[in-house]
Every structure is written in structure tokens, then in C-alpha cells.
Image 1 (cartoon, rainbow, N blue to C red):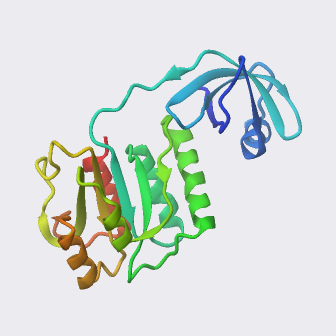
Image 2 (image 1 turned 45 degrees about the horizontal axis):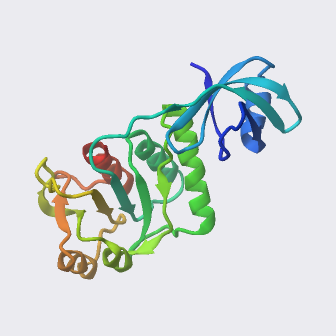
Length: 233
């Protein structure tokens, strides 16, 4: 399979340009030569077969063919609102959520949270999505939304969106948990210390469905991945 590269600017008139990290990876790591095949994707569900046309210091020109467009996915889009874990666990979680088809990740601000959703953290997560898409063949980027507190997120939820919260003592997650009329699912995952009683009360007041992921206490990233494996389209 040809190597895959992300381009934020779609090819035009049969040509495209890679710059920065993508160009350096192609030329310095893969040691590409003129004529080598690659695949470009722009994160919106499209990909282009391409060949290296010329190589500069930090710039690679490509000749591109007609794009292919991914079919519309079936099922209900999944948003995961997660109190981010620390360090490398964030990167691993984003990689797996991308592979599993999660539509959007919202860094959730909670009372017991341990990691802040700063602008630099968001940029790092976005880069992780791109790298995961390159590896797994996904052509639509998982959206990394701006971080927001739980109460604000609950206030923003439309009536036709199903919201579930992963917490011990909830009912089992089954095929009937999400109503057929829901146009989106939002799944809430708290921090290592769990949601506070006040946060749980606010969620239940908003009509959020409390679910259990089994008898064991899961780490944040494990719970998020378990939900994506069950709910992502």
C-alpha cells in the first residue's frame, strides 16, 4: 500500500504540494524519489492517488489523479466527552478512538480532572488524529473540540441527542440503550477519581442515561475506548 499523507489544502488542477513535517517525512524518513506513489487525504472523506513530481528542501510537488470519496457511514455519530488522562495515555486514547470511528472528542472539564485542555494540548491531540488516520486508512478526521465544563456541555445538548454517562451502578449498555430516534450519541467519561455527586446529579437532572461498563473500575482511556467499540459507527 502506498504511504499516506495529510494535506489541509485539497489538490487542484491535478497537482498538490506537501510542506513542513509531511514533506520532511516523505523525503528524509522514507527517502522518496521522483515517480514514487503516495496517497493524499484532506480529512473530509476524500483521498487522491498521487506521484512525486519534484522534491525540494522542505517541499514536495505531487501529480494527483481523480479522488475517491468515502461512502457515507451508517449508524449514529458518536461524540466522546472525556476528562483527559495525563501524558502518553492521551495520545494512545486518541489513536484508538480514531481507529474505531469516533466522530468527535470533547475534552471534559470536571472537578477531579487532572489534565487541562489548553490550546497546545488541543493542537497535540489534533496531530495525533492525523497520524492515526494516516496509519489506519481513515479519511475523515475525528474532530477535537474545545474543552468545556460538564454543565456547559449539558446545556448545549439538543433534544434529539442521546447522552450517556459511564459510572458504576448504571444499567448495562445494550442495543436498546440508544433510542432509534437519536441523531447523535454523546458519551461522558469522568476522571480517575470519578464524577462528583454534584456532577452526577446535574447529569441525571438533564436526563442523561447512567450506564455501567462492567464490574471493574476502568481507567479513563479504557472506558472511552470501550464506549467507542460499542457505539461508534
